[in-house]
Length: 385
Image (cartoon, rainbow, N blue to C red):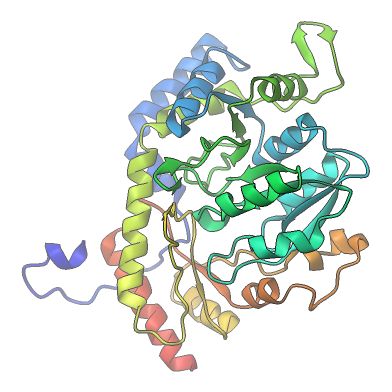
């Protein structure tokens, strides 16, 4: 850390800009390996399927501790195909948190079902298990638990509710690569788990990509059919499927990056600790809290502050990139207005939506950069209080 390195007085440092995320730094750190494997894929002309997809699927399944991994074209595809493979369809309902990216709801709609939103816990930002029973009806077929920002959801409690009501539990771990629950990797806990490999994710491709991990042989087989036009044998189609395959080039890149994932997650956790130590005495801020038994992967480091827009603008003027995840809750999205929700339906979700601010977070951030962001954020908080 920066304080342990210093043996003499360091002059205050300024930065022209500190981006919210910088994918170029990561590429430069592993450039020879990436360039080699990309060149190999192109040289071989093996752009679809094995060997690269199969190698990655086996490696990622082993990494999370699951029996199977099915590579697909995106995290959205992973969720949709999983729901369809579980038999979720027309007339069914699926419960999910109101505070997440719209892809979670889109997947439900693409599967033919109706998304039903529930409120979140204001500390974890994840689906509040106590809210789920309020929305269970005779049409409810599944619950999607989202590991938002990299913190595992209350999976044990949600799984218990799902079993009691004979519902499927699907885990949306699209932001939680490398996270753990009670010492076990997310993705290997026994229920289908969906991942996104969008470039900015903890494990990101150089384009779109996703995967489903599962221990269920039949579910694995059905998802594989659905992702590839319903076909096991060329030109023989058992069901109507999709073209949702993971590209071989992306699989090859992901195989290289997977070797570094644990180290990158550990660095994210170090950065979170640096932020926490530097900002703990800033009363205007509510800092993220890692819940007991969780190994937060810190895809995002999200604070809460009441005058967010002004703070964000001032930080931007200083060259510090921040994000908002997510400013408009799902139940208030124009595209989902037909579901009939209104402002005020989900108090905790709406409160978070108006106060959350994501600070720069990527493994290649330097300690000094983290300290600088924290210092400037404190200055802005004091100026705007």
